[in-house]
Structure formats: structure tokens, C-alpha cells
Image (cartoon, rainbow, N blue to C red; front, side, top):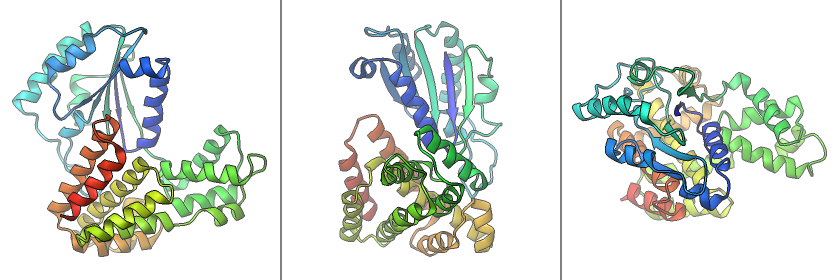
Length: 337
């Protein structure tokens, strides 16, 4: 079975992958039957060898290939999409070989391409791997629009066996925005605050939820932009000491640099702050204004380089190639060098 999971909703996509891992059974056995490959470097023989391997003491193997098809998307500039990048001769041969191999893909293997961004309809994946509803499944994970966020919060709270008032859900959506991972963490805190017994109210939201973490990430990115290594490292460890999970913190840093890239591109087009808010779906003007000021510390080429490096760091953490805390320390040190 072949899956292509793509889109910017990393949180929901990660939950889907975690559910599949859980179905493999015992965590130790599941680990032995799970392989994660870097789609930017994997070769066809390597992929075939992994897919052909029999499950160890289980019924299934999961093979994840990260960001193979994303390589053919145009560079992210605001929200505009240009023409996809052309495939090299090596990539063309890889895809041709993959299509020829798929009928021989063992029934015990789930081959899952995981793409960190939405794939445009012109992406070659849609022409060479058309969805057939039986062996190939393509699913896009898009975060909810700001106007639908309160309903998402209420459904998520219900899934946690809790309740939240409509006013509280709207206020939480306003304070946090469309960062689903942060929203989920805030819901956990709010549930505990309500002792898992009563509905979460707007008063609870005002008591527990603030923009402090976002402001701290602004400070961290400011220090990186000014290459103040000691200061940046202090901000990083203050966030970690305050309870921010390393992967969540990395996600926040990635989010901020993505906003910087988008704002800088829109600035070059002469967009106003309100226009950028509408284009990027950002409710609070201060986020756009802060990003515009921060962008002066970075050239576009450096922002694109940093954004690519952040993807590599996330991959190294998720595949176990590097411990999360060490990876963050090295990241900040490298960006400030």
C-alpha cells in the first residue's frame, strides 16, 4: 500500500503517523519495523531493499520517505505558486523505477511519502502516481482557517473528554492562532486547570494563556538575526526551562522564519500590514509588524538557507540521528556564528 501525505498541518499529520506506529504493537517491535528515509538523498535500490524486508515478529512494516515530492515544488514566496521545478535525469529514473516497482511492493509494507508542504496540482506525483483508491492514497493535511478555529478547538476538547464554552474557544483561537500544536498544549493545561470536571471558561483562558511564549520566540529570533550567540542561547534555555518541549520549540522557530520569509516577499511587492495579515491569515497586526522589523536583520538568501537548515534539524531529531536538546543548541550556535 502506498500513501502520499502532504500539507502544512504537521500536527494532524503527525498524529496519523503515530496511530499507524501504535498499530504495530509493542514499541520495541514497532521500532524495528519502522524505517525513516530522507527523500532528498534516498536511492531507489535503498528504498526497494527496505520495502522488501519482511516484518520482524509482526504483520506490517512502515517505511516513511520524507520530502521527496516537495523538492519539485516552486520556492515558497508569500502564497504564490509558480511552475514546479523540473526533475533531473536521476530523479526521472528514480520515479520511473518506483512506478515499475510498486506492483511488486509486498502486502506487508506500507510505503508512506510524508511531505511537509502542500503539493500543487502540477507536481509530478499526481501524473505518475494517480490515486487508484485501492493501492495508492493521497491525502492533504491543511490547517483550519482562522474563522473555523473555534470549532476545531471545541471538537478537540470533546475528544479529550472535556468541554469549553464557545466564548472561551473564540478567545483561545484569537490568542494562539492556527498553531495546532500550541493549541493542543494549551487545551491540556486548561483541562487540568478545570480539574477535568467543569467546562473551560473565558476566565480560564485569560488566566493561563498568554502571548509570552511567542514573544520569547521573537526575542530568540531577534538575537539570532543580530548574531548575538550568548543572548540567543539564554533565550533558548529560558524557553526550555519554562517547559517548552524541544520539538514544539523548533516548530515555533520554523513558524517564525516562515513568517519572516513570507513577510519579506510581500514587503518587496509593496503590501501593507493589513494586506499581509489577510494574505497570511494572521489576526494580530503586531506579529506582522514584528516580523517586518526582524526581516531587516536577514537577507532573503540567508532566510531561505536558514529555513532549509531548520528542515534538516527537524529530520535529524525525528529520525533519531541527533538528540533534540543537542540539536537545538547546535542550531542556535550555527545560526549565530
